[in-house]
Image (cartoon, rainbow, N blue to C red; front, side, top):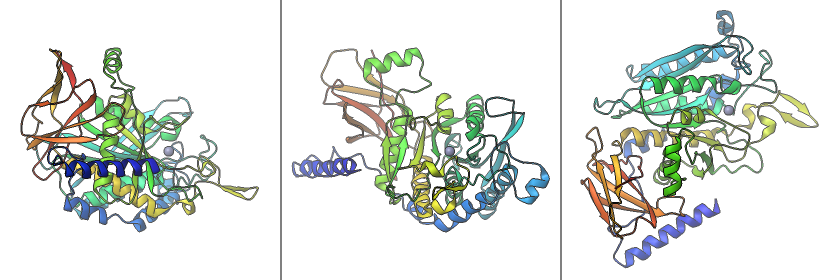
Length: 460
Ligand SMILES: [Zn+2]
């Protein structure tokens, strides 16, 4: 945290010094521009609603993927089937409020017996689609997800309480609240608000969904997975940050890709990592109330999550998780033992914190959904040995871009350090050696919405 602040102060100081030297017009910190409509939507995010949604999810007793989903249990409000129907009804209610702007869907399948699945089990993902308003851009998609299934100490206990307030009632509440507030706006691109099941049994829901997305050829640009974003109220918690985990070398990289990555020093420039950096930029642009703390690793030790299912299919996906987890409150039977309360109960969740994380998610989704597509076929020309660096690219598809920005950073730096607006061109020559920095290019529209940055491949 302190290091992040120091880094920020150093950047500000550097810009002031550059400004004094009259350089600041072309070289500046890679900031984004605040969109007042997005800022207004963020103010609509409600901690009270998030609390009542998490309380409701907990009221189903257990949401274990193997728990009841027959009509009688659904009517009695017990088990995962009841939770699923309630989530669907919430999305439908938000859709009614926006004149039917959300398409509410389910993705149901039967998982055959496998590890932690003792018998054929129907698993249902529930999602809402806010279709893009621009036909040329609506096929481009950003997605937020959380898992609505829960568990206690025993992954096969279909009856015992498994409140799952934090894991992952919090992430489910983030998907719901993002759908509610963002459905009041219109974006050129499509946003999908997803809640999956089967996570605790082995990522089954997200695996199925990510494969469907791949098979159906969705142009899915970014996935935000929120899992354990409740800000557990333990004494050592840092409520001012949320961790953002991103893979370095992509799990879906081929041998050929890995050869290139090794040769060019591309270990920290996966699509997921650029998405994480984008979230950091969004966090510095909008006042979400929580600072993204980038963690350059796929996930925590010994743990996995639904973003991995999307990474496996080659999509950019990151995981958000609170700063410090309390393992007494995860995957535990609700009980008192030696004076310690175990169990994932709502009383340990900081609902204001969940609301702040929801704001960061909503700001990221909205920024991406409003932005032009990244430029395509970005190359760094390497035909001649020279000390200048020439980049070429094809226009951002979809016609939203009005210009491009070249960004760069030292090879040792975690985040983009400099940006230069090069105008509405497809080629730029930078007066610095490609051997000493990492470049990227992003597209910008007239209102200042920025695309994800892309890094170039060499072209001889
Ligand atoms: Zn989880």
